[in-house]
Image 1: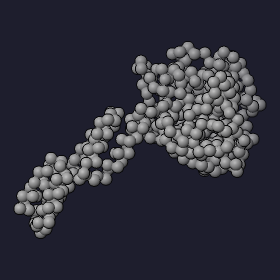
Image 2: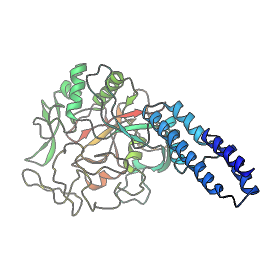
Image 3: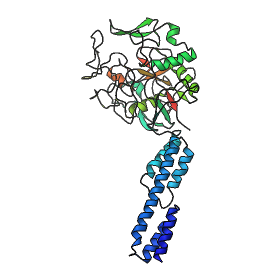
Image 4: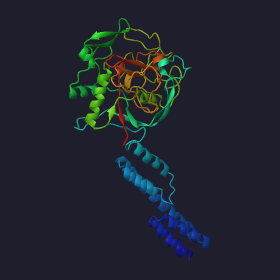
Length: 399
């Protein structure tokens, strides 16, 4: 009788009916615990289960790769069937759940959207995990500014991706070529550049997005500078149109959340001077072409650059983002507000109709150490342009 039960158990397992197979195996064990075929049948049923799990996971992986969330979810449910207890199911379940949240992508995943006309691709993007963080600075943080408070808990509920680097000169050139956009620097026929003779930022005529921090010709891989908030917004609008996806400037909360990347210290790398080269900062060991040094600088630090560095030259932060909080200060979508009273608590941009002041976040190649802190923020006119200001874009990831 036990032999017959074992045969039925194996037949059920071969038809992926593991509930019946396990029941028949238990019944056979109770009747004839010493039967020599028990261990063999048990091992074969376990092999059937492993094959079934591997098959389902492989098909689910292919579905996720093809951005087919519904198919992946169906396969995930199949993996939850009674009798299957695979160690890898929980990981797959998490990734299927993430795919539903992040429009079929995973947190930390990198991608670039193709242009609808197939003429190129958008910036490389990184999917940022949703979560919450303390925005602003604590009352006792050294060099704290009044506009960085009150510190508050902000929930990042809207899934988004952020450009891995600042927008480059080459990327901005594509936008200009396609749209014939005339930047504020071109309309005003001037921007701010670094003067090697005086060591100061000064206004200079004829400087546009095509120029570097000295007013010379910019290189394609450099972050585009001499661009206003208006220009950055126009680029994001064009990118949304040409890709069919919701591109925009990041909100101030999203920028600081991504910059901190889970940290609560004044800088994303910790306290004080970095122990390793983490970005293009004002280092005590850096020198200009005319051998100038910084009046205010990070002690014992040298990154080898005076002026913007080509994008992506340094260590990314824990979210996989380069140059965030260094190299160039960046535009965010928000209107400027002198404090966080009545600010949104869910990460969206704080915008008032008709506002003319906009917000800058993150330090630059010429920022003093206190202005590189994660909480640092500055308000300027929307048409401001400078050798220290650039931008990157965000993209909504909600399905």
